[in-house]
Amino acid sequence: MVDSHRLLKEMKEYAESENVPIMMDEGINFLTNFILKKHVKSVLEIGTAIGYSAIQMALVDPNVVVTTIERDEVRYLEALKNVKAFGLEDRITLIYNDAFDVSLSDKFDMIFIDAAKAQNKKLFEMFEKNLEKNGFIITDNLKFHGLVSKKEEEIKSRNLRGLVRKIKDYIEFLKTNTKYETEFFDVGDGISVSTKK
Ligand code: SAM
Image (cartoon, rainbow, N blue to C red; front, side, top):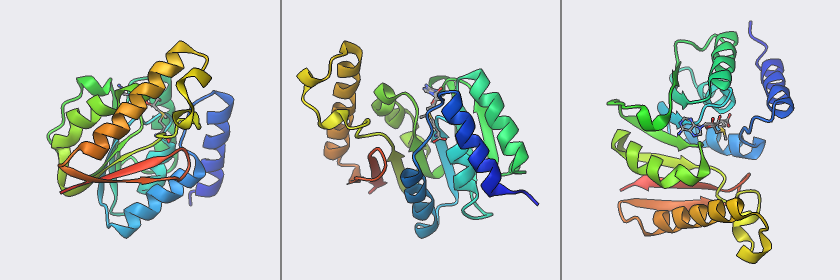
């Protein structure tokens, strides 16, 4: 019998010690409740890291399958190890590649974008063809640790300013995208849910 609680705790500790960004607890709760409530059965995740959110999503229900993409080899290998430890190899497909080099023909009930934050819009546009009718595209970190609500001049680093601008542009893109109805949730680091019309 897998001790999920202990394994998840160890993953969190690993992420913290190795500086791997993983979703905050509040965000994970939101995501898993959403999957349950909307009867999501298939998920495409962009940005696996060490598999923390992918595993939590798969644990919601034995019928949930997750395909997840990671470009960093060390993280991918760690995710592989973790997925095996949970015995979830049959339901979590790990793809080791840059998402921009991945071409999928499958359709998913939900797409979770959690990769490089400056690439949200490109990833959205690239993978929306893989979304089922009435499916959902979820994006994390729209508050970007509170920086998105700050004035530009308050952000000292030029790189960070550029990144925050891109996240703001992405929020605007979601708001004005008439193919989707987007709701924004002040949960964790800020989450959006775009429902395909
Ligand atoms: N979803 C994970 C979780 O909550 O457990 C956290 C993912 S972490 C925030 C983002 C990950 O996306 C990083 O591990 C990074 O290497 C990966 N990434 C960034 N851009 C990517 C791309 N273009 N293709 C594949 N992976 C990418």
